[in-house]
Length: 360
Image (cartoon, rainbow, N blue to C red):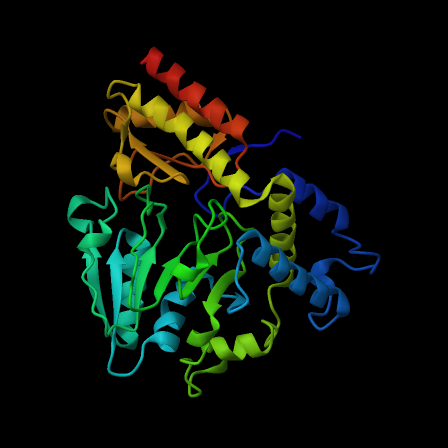
């Protein structure tokens, strides 16, 4: 079967080895006579899946014991509300750095809960860069500082994090988690929708320092309370069992590949191929992001005009490339090169870009 050259921004490509293993176990998981989606979430088989998935994630990201791992639902978008509901202390403020659409949405939801303010923003420059950490204006009295580490629409990524904060750092890592090593001690909470680097849509990973769990107010609805989910090992209600199982398979694949350091090396190789094609094009392709803020996950670029861009996308689709149209906020093209996108597929795209330029 011919596979698409998948560069979708999300839901995104999954490793072929993961899909093959899931297909093999679809009808009969571990001799149970049932598929994972048919198992009771209270069964021994699923409890083992749940625990193994947490262990794999803890090992791959070197997550210290003082952090709790939660598997939740509602995507990163629900976290935009859950974070201030649980962490924004009465009489305090929450600080947000705006670097794109998703951080704007996070701020908007937080303002529905309490006092949330902008600590820094690159909106005036159409989000072409990440603010310098020295530009961030955050009060020591804030409950937390929120950032979005990678911006899928604009193709920017944090490469230097705010340091020596007196308050917890909260990060939306939906589109670059597991693509580079993390120093978890720099964060109070990180969260990620799975559908880019971790697995399929349906499960959201939250990694939270246990001290922050104490902020969760008892008056919150149970499904929106981090402490409730932590106390029940993410099994308070029926979890997205199939998504967690596929997350487990992706983490096993990552471990077998060589872990996060190998994934980081591959992400550097893949992004370098595309940025090289852009930079050597003598202006035929123009990258949206400033060089110091370029994302290794989402490469955004424009062409001379809409007509040329349309021709590029049409020809690319004929060659089997999927998902290269840019977001309307930027236009042009976007190649999302998450962990599961093979290096050889990116090599093919870079070659196509060079050949298209030479013909046009």
